[in-house]
Image 1 (cartoon, one colour):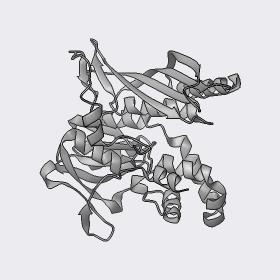
Image 2 (cartoon, rainbow, N blue to C red; image 1 turned 60 degrees about the horizontal axis):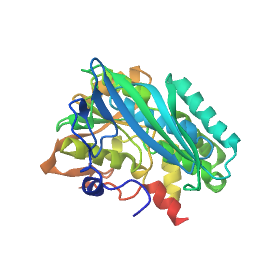
Image 3 (cartoon, rainbow, N blue to C red; image 1 turned 90 degrees about the vertical axis):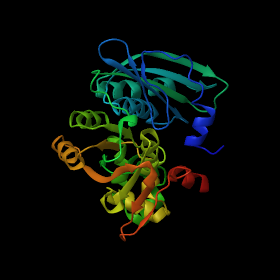
Length: 331
């Protein structure tokens, strides 16, 4: 198996058939392109999502909170709390444990969520620290959204810019050689993208402005997120490459390294489906969130395609592996 997420086919064959007992409280269960469960426990709905960070280093605690709360927010829910599981290798220093918890605490406070508990263990089964965060949120019964709700005719909107997290990782891990070619200012600005990885507030602004479905852009980049939304909605799509927001720093780093920014790890950016794309873009901009309408969903029979900058259409296919992982494996 390759490093990274399982394919949609692998998930359908090996994971999704095993869903336990059927419960009437489950409004949204597991599925391709669906990162959170939605439970109706009476009154508001409860939205739950889990994400791991492996090979934890500096910033891992903060990132773990961000990626889990992003998934909850992408369903239109306000994150309320997080449950944290820390697995540390034998010999790990207590200072390492406390540093992770300080990061988790600081990000949780910034987002206004509580640390509810969890589990901490030293184990010989891991060689690096593993951080798993489960985020729990709440939304009004008539306000939560799911990728299943997107439909042909909806427009696709992207916030901020694509490939933000991947750009920041490359700028941090390969800062010296990139600076020698692109300049220190470009690399410094790219590394600072780590400060923009949360999509909680923009997701809540989007759902208030009429978003029908949302998906945070993570592994596989924009193209992976579009593929997953299409899969969840049973739709096809068309994208307009010249409207996709690619920041100068991302474009420069990807061009130098031979990477496609549309397939690059993209935490910090949100994919939104809405009946009126331009109205949603305007509402997000009023909320201080840069956004662009980049395409629309179409009937599944029409397939998936992208109009290149040259004006020609070509078939659209998600990358089998995130561009970041492909690059790192080549080093």
